Picture (tube, helix red, strand yellow):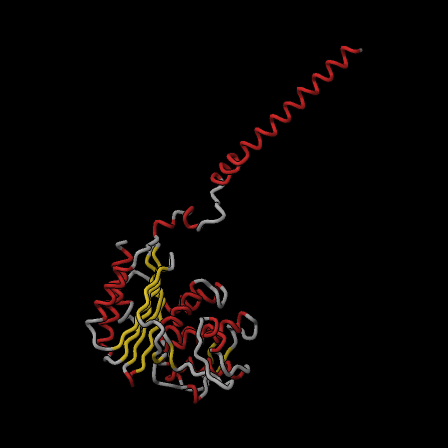
Length: 319
């Protein structure tokens, strides 16, 4: 009996010693095991996922040489010019007077489309809703829709497409009317506020959006690119229409014909104000370029914008 008790005690001592040694071994090796599992998972928590996906090989960090090239090009032209560039892969950017105001002109059609799709997303409108053109909608400033005359019926989707692809003023006026009929007098304040706009009228008056700057305009495109104002479906729809723009003499002229460019130009002939802003979908190297020019005729403006666009393309493709 005594022998059995002794054997049992010795066994328990060995078992206890094993557990204690095992505990200390686990404490010592656990961090190494955890680290190995962390690396093997392929999903580090605290670094940019693009590093693991190897898309970081398309990152470009140093844009100082491109900025210097932009300045050299600017100095060749006597008119006032504005430049904003953003390399969307890692958000490196260049700004030259990008916060100075100039006439918005047709660029205002982009936030108008965003405002309408926001209402559709919130089910206050339907993309399939129809509207019959009124005589007061007809405008021959830009586009040919005015030629169909009054009473012709279009869906909201069709009007947005015509407005963005052809920069059609009649379609824009019709969409304004649709909003007013639905109780919206000011479709822009919410869009602009979401883009960081801080130029507001005093005394509660509806602000004027006659002017804009490249930074705010670029934020609209970035919001569409990231689907941050309207959902992915409607953001993509707007950008798709903008890739089908019929105006190809400025930013588009600086890149190869097979590269999609979702852009919107603006023109105010009365004071020689021109702008063009958009996303260039260079494979694996998307970037945004927004340009403005005031005080030079269209031919000179086009030359300036094309030259800047070519410089941006060449720098991005070669780095």
